[in-house]
Amino acid sequence: MAARLSASDGSHVVSEPHLRTVVVLAAGEGKRMKSSLPKVLHPLLGRTLLGHVLSAAEPLAAQRTMVVVGHGADQVRAHLAEVAPSVTAVHQAEQLGTGHAVRIALEAVPEAAGTVVVLNGDVPLLRPETVAALVAAHEGERAAATVLAAEVPDPTGLGRIVRDAAGRLEQIVEQRDATPGQLAIREINAGIYAFDAARLRDVLGKLSTDNDQGEEYLTDVFGLLVSAGEPVAVHLAADHTETLGCNDRVELAGLRRLLRDRVNEGWMRAGVSLLDPATTWIDVTVALDRDAVVDQNTQLQGGSVVGSGAVVGPDVTLIDTVVHAGATVLRSHAVGAEVGPGASVGPYAYLRPDARLAEKSKVGTFVEVKNSELGAGAKVPHLSYVGDATIGARANIGAATIFVNYDGVNKSRTVVGEGAFVGCDTNLIAPVEVGAGAYVAAGSAISNDVPPGALGVTRAPQRNIDGWVARKRPGTVSAEAAERALQGASSQVPAASEGEAIHGTAESVGAVTEAGDTATE
Ligand code: UD1
Ligand code: MG
Image 1 (cartoon, rainbow, N blue to C red):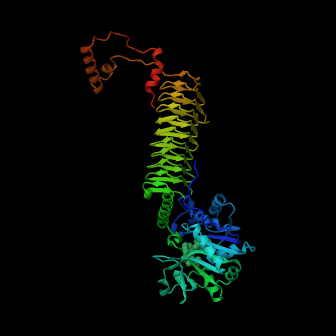
Image 2: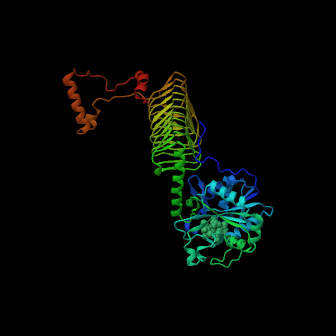
């Protein structure tokens, strides 16, 4: 696949070597989420809230990253082990405030020096570029502390940036401790900071709990540093939506829409067509090539990739699925699958893990494929289950073919050779092999191998019982129709000879033309 474009260009990477420690605060409960899942573990387009924050801090190339855990600590630790195994979790048994949280984190690493970057765990829209710019400004100015601030339309609930007459930061005041005058301030504390480690340690020991919540506020560090004559700075975020926190599920849905729009805009600017961005939800972990087309009502999740010129949607969900260049996937659900170049899927297909479709193969309508390979140009056009199979190039699998892979205890594989032709309504009872170029007659149940070039057939001889409907279903629609048909026939052509009551011979059953007539393409 061609080199993938990325929605961000990587220009935010901070390259100068600096001693840095990142501390993410994630011990709070998030009561208003009303959830058994800790707030920071709620998912948002491909990462948890915490995962987004960790990823925003990643380009800082910190010596160490610590996450303060408390509520749901076991769940948060398990998540960290999965997504960020190098991160150290620090346990805050009681949530005594953001200042207390940072204090115990730093107590765990007495050797930490240089810059300490603190991030609230519930600010998932923060861009790496913004964190990097905050830290660069802080380190460039040799400030004791720098806070990320934003001008917001509605500051309710947030800490306010209080400046003096000369415009210098004086202190950060929490909503519940603010005076009416301070409440009118719309410049807020985003909960993202850079500190000089030594001076932060010093001041953290002096925090009081003399506030409305009786907590050690990290924000009080700023007022204390200002009083001590230390240089503090404010770094204003250009886009205030980056600083939005998440307190309940309504806010989470709002953040999801904002992130969707940001991700979609990035892909469109990178050369991807999104026909209806409002109904297209692309995880931040997904990659798309230039000239990919995503039609409406489509979700692209996890490690999914869509190649150049591929068309995905409408109504498609891809989870960890790779769709190669020029393929089409229409009204389908795929997880852990791979769709080869120029292959076609759907409408209404279900691709399950390890469904691998080679180039120009086809999985059509109401077809489920699991742990199976389709060779180049192979077709399964309609109404089939393909489980644990290897299907050779250009083989054709007729409608309603079932790969019978499970005997109630074990799963077995079926192999269909290159160019084989399987008639409709066939059961291939694994383990079994249909050789290259072999045919299987429609309606067969195949449990023994079919050699290359042979016809496999298990169909029972057909019997026609003349006059059965007139005798057994008199007066029905069918009987009336049959009567009309037979009268018409007898008035036009000589009456059929009184043949056997049962027609059909063994020889006629397996004719290749019968298999061909009833298979589909
Ligand atoms: C905090 C800031 C506020 C800022 C806002 C931005 C303080 C005192 N206030 O307020 O100025 O505008 O963030 O969103 O810092 N946490 C712990 N341990 C604790 C307490 C909190 O780990 O003992 C974590 C929480 O899980 C959360 C973060 O710290 O991730 C912030 O705590 P939260 O209670 O949300 O603070 P806010 O009231 O939002
Ligand atoms: Mg908060």
